[in-house]
Image: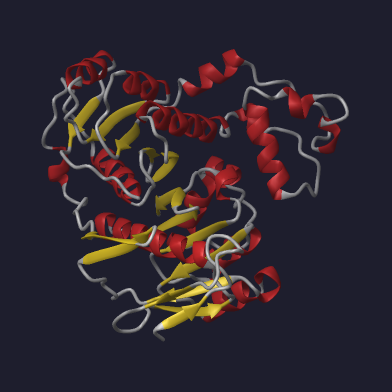
Length: 393
C-alpha cells in the first residue's frame, strides 16, 4: 500500500488528508480502526523511540504519546508491589510479560497526561499487554506484531474502532527528510545520532565523577526520550522509566520545573497517605486519577470540600500537608536527568536537586557552565557534558 486516506488533518476543517510514500510502500498496516493525522504522527514518532530504547538497553520498551511528545517512556524492569498498586495493575489475573511491564511503567508515570494516548511497543503485543491497554482510555497502538489473543482483545476495544497498527521492524527511512511549512519545503539529514554508547559520559567536569551502570542506563533512556520530544525539553528518569517529562517550553528552567513537578507527583503517589485514600467502589479510573492529582497539589481543597469529597471517598481524608509533602519528596534519590541542550544557569540544578537528581547528562557549552558545575558540586551531583544537542520539532 502506497497511500492511506485520513478522515481529516490536525483539525476537522483541514481536508483532504492522507499519508503516502513517494517511493516504495508504506511500512505500516492498519489491522483495525481508522487512524487520523495526529494518531499517525504519534505512532511513527513513538515507534522510533521504543525501537531505539530497545536497541540501546536490550530490554523491551514502551511509550505513551500525546500530541507528538511522550507522556511516558520505559523499559522493562521489575515492578514493586507499590508500583503495581499506583499503576493499577495489581489486580490483573494473568502474569505481566516483560513488554506488559514496560507498558505499565510508561502509562503509569503520568496518568493524567497519558489519558487518550497513542501507545508504542518495541516487541510483539501479547495478551497481558492487550489486557492492560483495553482498560485505559487510548486512541491506538503500534507494534511490530500482535498475538492472535492480543488482536482479539484490541479489536473489541472502543466498540471495534480502536486503532491497531502493525509496523515493519526492518523498515529504514531515507537519510534525508523533508516537510512543508507555509508552502516552503524544508530538508535536513535525519537525526541518526547514536545514544547507546557509554562514551556519552566521558567528559565529566564535576567533582563527583561516578556514574553507576543503572545511572548510565537511565541517562540513555532520558536522552533517547528527549530525541523524540518537542523542544525545549527535560526528562527525569528513575529505575528504567521516565518519571517526569517537560516538553515544548520556551525557557529551559520552565522545562526543568514542569518535569520536576511531574516527577514529584509520581513520587507522592507512592506516599502511604496517598495510597490509603478511601476511594468509593466503582469510581471511574479517570476520576480517580484526577482526584489523586488534585489531592496531591496545592488545590487539594477542591476535592476535600464538603459536598465534593463524598463523590469520591467513603470518608473525608486528611489533607497532605506541605510539610508532609516536602518530607516525602526528600526521600526520593538516585534520579537521573537529561536535557536536550545546555543548562544556561545553575537554577536548573537547584530545581533538579529538589526532586532527588543525582546524575545529569546535558550538552554543555553555556557561557555559565562554571555556575552550573559549581551548583552540581554543591550537591555532589555527577554531571556529564555530552556535547550533543537533541532539538526536535
